[in-house]
Image (cartoon, rainbow over all chains, first blue to last red; front, side, top):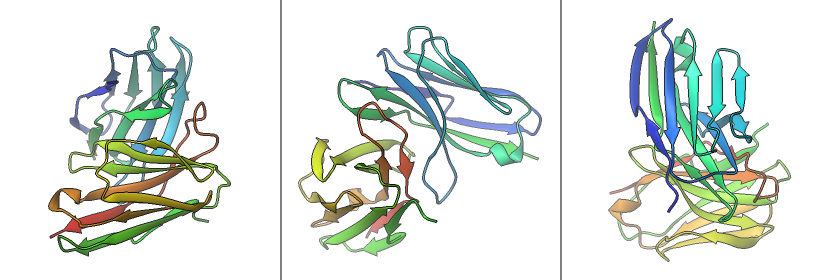
Length: 111
Length: 114
């Protein structure tokens, strides 16, 4: 069974701080995605990383795919209250045709 | 313009009842999914349909029966509801299924079984 473990599960920080969320697995994924979910809404895709070692930036968010394509990280610089939400990583398992989700990281950024 | 819409938004019902959740997408995608999100926010796939054909059927009780009348619609019918069925159910769609992994989610249906 392919599993994705996210850490930390909960994070409460002050506006302006930096943070990193980790997504780890013992399995190799063909690609990895990060979604953000706000209360009462469905997850929305932030980024897809495909190549081992790939780094993508989305404004203050930096996403990295591990060299072995088993792990990923999301780094947020100078967090803002608008970054508050549930962050989900999801790995694409090409052999099973499924997208496997991590347990999620709930981020709260206080003004 | 709602891309993936599901109804109802909230569903409160008693144990033993039968209920349905409807989902429609106007993105022209050919693959649709049902996911269940539990109280700990864990999102788990239940079913996937590609062009009206069932391609993923996870270990879900057979009280849950998906139906896809056409590739723009995927409904979920649940028989004999149990307390443990309480969760948020998300419909999603993607273009192409395997190898094309961008999922577009609806806003969820919060099911509460009392």
